[in-house]
Length: 127
Image (cartoon, rainbow, N blue to C red; front, top):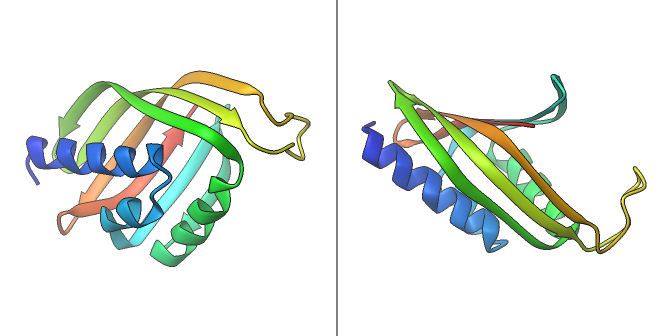
């Protein structure tokens, strides 16, 4: 995969995420995609395969009234891209961890994407 192809694929994935369009997100993913959310050095969520990703992504829609991931930086090498992410969201419901509906979440982090067969094979969201 070339750098422009990787960047376009990630931009399409992020557009789907920002629009709550799970179908768009899935169109960018390899059938065996692995997704991990990593917070403070610990894996807080992991999905294996496209079906598990779809189930999690569909459920997550209910948590937010608005959400946006914006690419701040992009570094590509071989079949791996490291992307600096600026994240903004407004929660739609009260969360079990005490976060209330209407809470604004803003953070920066990094997402690491790997690619296989012209699709995203893994995503690590690190904050």
